[in-house]
Each structure stands twice: as structure tokens, then as C-alpha cells.
Image (tube, rainbow, N blue to C red; front, side):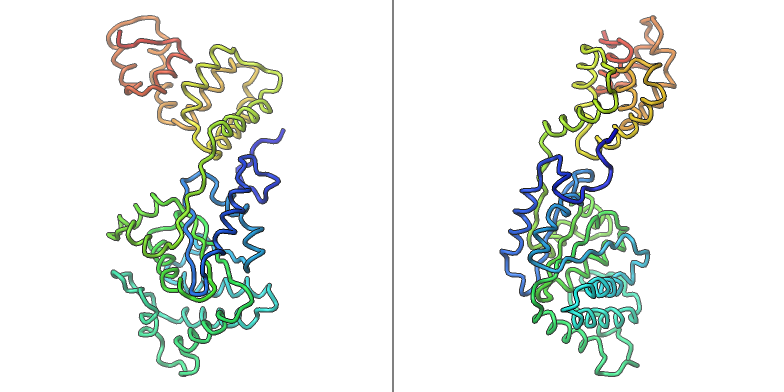
Amino acid sequence: MELISDNPIKDSSNDLLGRASSAEAFAKHIFSFDYKEGLVVGLCGEWGNGKTSYINLMRPELEKNSFVLDFNPWMFSDAHNLVALFFTEISAQLRDYEDDSDLADSLGSFGELLSNLKPIPFVGDYFSTLGVFFSFFSKKKKEKNSLKNQRDKLIEVLKGISKPITVILDDIDRLSPDELQSILRLVRVTGNFPNIVYILSFDKHRVIKTLNDSNIDGKVYLEKIIQIPFDIPRVAKNLLQENLFSSLNKILGNVFPDKSRWYNAYWDIIKPTIKNIRDIRRYTSSLSNVFKQLGKEIDIVDLLTIEAIRIFYPEKFKEIYEIKEFLLSQSDDEKKKLILTKFTENNEIYQSLLRVLFDIDNINS
């Protein structure tokens, strides 16, 4: 039994959401812009909306038009040295392209020089130019190997490359505040390097909040860096439903829930809860394991509903256990009404939960 994988899709053959044509079109669109003086693209979407999968669908078109390199900053723990690590890592990846060994050497040398700099604290626009690097550069280095010379050499090499370099920085919203600031400074400082196209993937609201919490106007700061902002298309609700039902059919097999109760459970609880493909993965993966163990012992609608509550509303799941005596009681006393009113919090999903699982309705009547 094969369920929707929790891993990003690799190519269009696994595109269950019909996004391949959109991703290809956007990748083509990027290279319609002038990248001779650098280009910064922001690929935005909420957690769970498939940003990495969308990038993978863009890759074939990106690879036709550029050298595609990946840098995952959240894999490195040294926030102060991220800039140097970036150039070193990109240099290593670029060596796979034999025709551009000079560029790889220049990037590597630039990274090595940066690694000799002492960590520089973030203060306002300290990183607005590379000049801040130069002032911290070790005076023991020979002039010919100075950071400025290496930078100038790198820019000249970049001007002459056969096709641009696309650098993908995925999931930067996972970074700590210090790491996020380091990466954004890097992009702001090098975003005008010739023939480099940056694609930054992130949840815009999370990044803005992280910057705001560090006394930086996140919205304004991103607007200064991102030249082409793009929100990945939301998944159509009917496609989410199709993928969910497909997975449920694989799990349940020949076991069929009561149609009336399942109708209420799905439309009132599960459908408004599941908002993206990652939610489907979380739900069906857990449900599959539970069904194997308890599928023959528990009513299927109860199982489907309880598992949704356990996964997406863990505090309510715990609360159900704590008030189980009142939920199962046949009395209509005031204490029970108060407890159930507190439980539902005027939330329609919680009210539906009581109705579907415990046949409790109109608790305030």
C-alpha cells in the first residue's frame, strides 16, 4: 500500500497536484529578466504548501538555462561563518562543471578569505556593502590576495561565464534569527554580482516576524532584497480532497464507514482541518499505523475522527480523556454543561466533534 510520501516530489511524474506546468512557466519567466547584474527571486508559501516540490518541478527548465547549485544554510551550525561557507560550498558544487573550473577557484578563494574575517555583529545596515568586509580583513595577507582583489577577480570571471548560475536557498524560514540575518546579508551584498540568480524559498510571514522580533522591519528589508516576489499557487481544494480520499481508500480497503456519520465527520471536522498536502501526509501516515492495530476493534468513523483530533488538536485530544466521564454521562446537569461549553470554546469543529463522537448537541439549550 503506497500513500502520499512525506518527502518532496522529485519530478513531474509524481506531480499529483498539477503544478508542473506552472513551475515550468515560472522558471522560464525568470530568465526573461536581465540577470547580467544579478537577480533575486523570492518563492513564497506557507509551511506544508510544497515549496521544495515546486522548486524540483522548476529544475529541468532552470538546468536548461543555468548552472543550478543548492545551498542549505540550515545544515550549517556556524551562523557567523555562513557567508564563507556559502562560497566554499558553491565552489565545491561548481567543480562538477568542468568548463568553469576558473570560476570555482575564484569562488573558493573568496570563501577562504572570508573565513579569515572575525565575526561581525549585525548593526543596522552594516552589511550594505562589501566594504565592511575589507575593514576587517587581516592585514597580514599580501595585497595581491586581498579580499578586494579576489572580489574584483570573481566579478570579472562571472561576467564571462557561458550561462548564469542559479543558487537555490530553500527553507530559509527554518533558520535561527542570526542565521537568517546572515543569509539575507549575503544575498543583499552579492545580489548584484553578475550572472547570479538567487532563488530564496520561505514562508514570508515567518521570515518577516523573525526579522521584526530582531528590531528589523522585515517587510521593508525583504522588499529591498527580493526583486521578483512569487507566491506559489495554492492547491485547489478539490485536488486536496481527491488525494485524501485516494489515500483513505488505500488504508481502509474493503472497510466502509457509516455514510451518514462519515459525511458529518468529514465535512464538519476533517475537511476544515486539512489545509495542505503536508496535512494529508501527517494524517494518513499516522492513520495507516493505527488502522492496522485497531481497525477491527473500533468504529471506523470514530477512528477516522479521533485520529484527526489527535494529530491536529492534541490538547483537545488530551482534554477528551480528562472529561470522559462527563462526555459519557447521560445527565444534563449544569456542571456538565459548563464543562462542555468550556471544551467547545464556541469553536464549530469542537462542537462537531462532540456531535459526531458522543451524540452531544445543543449543549447550551
